[in-house]
Amino acid sequence: MKVRVVGAGVVGLTSALRLAQTGHEVDVVAAKMGNSTTSSVAAALWYPYRAYPEADVTRWSATTYEVLCGLTSDPSAGVRMRLGQELFRQQTSDPWWRDAVPELGRVAVERLPAGYGDGYELSVPVVDMAMHLPWLLGQLEAAGVAVRTRYVGDLAGAFEDVHAVVNCTGLGSRELINDETLTPVRGQVIVVAQFGLTEWLLDQNDPEQLIYVVPRSDTVLLGGTAEEGDEELDVRPKTTADILKRCTELVPALDKARILSHRVGLRPGRPSVRLETEFIDRGPVVHCYGHGGAGVTLSYGCAQDVAELVSGLS
View 1 (cartoon, one colour):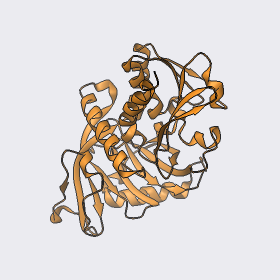
View 2 (cartoon, helix red, strand yellow):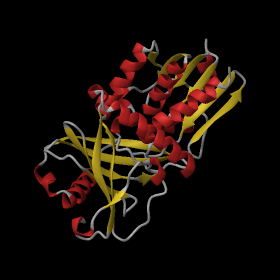
View 3 (cartoon, rainbow, N blue to C red):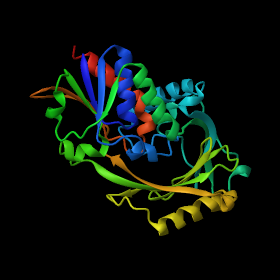
């Protein structure tokens, strides 16, 4: 089939790649590319964050974990397995997504930072999006997939010369198809120069004022915030100071880290990921959006389902 993917974040690009690998003739159109996408701001630590429903998210996350593990052998893909810890103030049970990872340990009590009572310890893929998005574009080019900058005002207009459309517009679906269940969840982060850090740390005890320190090859990403309903894209100096304070308390070596940039992105929050086929007058639309804070984590798993839905149309 001839298929057009609308949206060039990680979900759109992985869906297009999987469709091409399945044998479809694919192109991608999007108003925003590369550094303009929400995906480019992501910490891209594999973690099923603010995405639902749990059973499907666990399945999609497990598939993505496996795919990303396989990509660690290609340095240009920007994927590394890194050990890290999620820390809790009190004793806690295993996460609902436990079955998505092969191993999950507990941080020994004597290794917990002051003030913490429990913690998970696990190795997960960390994706450097400054490398992975260009890598995906290269894979698409090699597969014969054209990627073009184009604003799509309505899905009916995207059907020119194609049999089916895949909607991967994230928060943009709020306006594109009037999905009022989508909610922006503002995330502000800081990028600092790498200073020898190899392990990630995560603290979600305050659901709005998060703490995460995620090392990549040349940089370390510090976060962050999860401000529901907030669409301000400007960097807030007070938020920057608060993030630095929280992260430095957990990783004192950050005190001397060199700040490179500040970024803000809007996560596409939704009560559940929408991954289904809808038939409109012009033809079938496969929707794949509403991944919350887990676009990278769900991307390759959702792309597989997208390809199966499209193949089921032919």
